[in-house]
Amino acid sequence: MAIGTLYAVFTPPWQVPDEPAHYNYIRALVEDRAFPVLEAGDYDQAYLEELKTKGFPPEKPIAPLEYEDHQPPLYYLIMAVIYVTFDPAQDGPGQDARATLLALRLASLALGAGIVACAYVLAGELFPERPFLALTTAGFVAFVPQHVAVMAGVSNDSLAGLIAGLALILLVRYIRPREAVPRGYVRETHGEQIGVVIGLGFLTKTTIYFLPFLAALALVWRWRQEGWTARRAAREALRMFLPALLLGALWWGRNLAVYGWPDFFALQRHEAVVIGQPRTVEWIAQLGPAEVVRRLLVTTFNSWWGQFGWMGVVMDRWVYLALLIFTLGIGAGLMCLLFARRIVSLSTFERKGVALLALTLFSSLALYLGYNATFVQHQGRYLFSAIVPTALGAAAGLSAYGLVAARVFKRPLAWLPLTAIALMAVLDVFALFRFIVPALK
Image 1 (cartoon, one colour):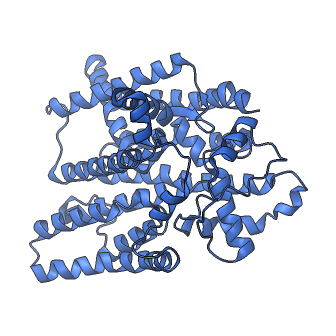
Image 2 (cartoon, helix red, strand yellow):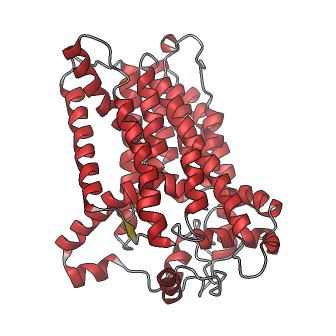
């Protein structure tokens, strides 16, 4: 929260990707007392590029940027409470509602802190005998520089990540056998609890629409594990998915009424409106497929760790090189754990939990690649819907070095991965004041 507050305060207004459009959605809810409708003209590529080039000067209004009006409403309804509490008119003319923007950023940051808590709880639920693994997982989520920057801006990514984290906790509890419940832990999660959280995800962002598939897999595992009859399994499926579908239908029905059949998610309207946004087929024709793939890989890696502002603020080359070595080191640690089963052995429950998290990561990656098949959006932040599973994998990879060091020095060194997490926290502050503030002031 402390480092995120520094980002919220020192990052200039509107210098978080899509922040003006998210802000305008909130403002429309409050001032128009209605959900906004995505219309032609809400995305002006030329004007947006002019604003980014000039650093969003106060004399250039952000009001025309309304291309996020197709998003599900839950995040914006929550932020509307903050908006009405901090009246933008108090900031004076030409100030771009700075006090209101800061309040919204801090509220989003609080939601982002909830993702850190979810990471800690999830790792603790899955591996209760390894408390340092949970702490390392939470720290990794907390201190990825790009994640801090996004959570400290006005964006529905913060609520989407929180709901995804909550859903994963409930699903892990759902598949845990009764005999594997440690003392003091919640014994059982019911299907309707999962359904409500998935339904809230339907009302938050399409990037977490993979959650019902994870729930269906968990349901099948539970069915086989407890030997349910087909009738019992059908009843459990109804308890799980009916609340989710009812909540989602509230928004999907509205979209059908506004945008027409079959635009449930308003994505067809979005594709028709964002004229001028670079398209992958155009890049392939101009640059060739090999160059497009290279740019996808490089930019995704860089921007997952930290490529700030509107992708225009990069860190020094040596920072990305160090992060690449760090990432490869995590991967090597994971390989050691996977192939050296004498070091770590997993129970059936733990293997299922790991499989569930791996499927989360693959689902997020598939959605990302699918989006980039149409539009050029090489932004690693789109993978943050799976940052909790990613962080747990990273924590596991780092823990391998602690295990090896413990064997060498003949003493427990489970805390060793936390030194890497501490360095990530230092990198956050360094990136803010060495790269972001100088480039955007």
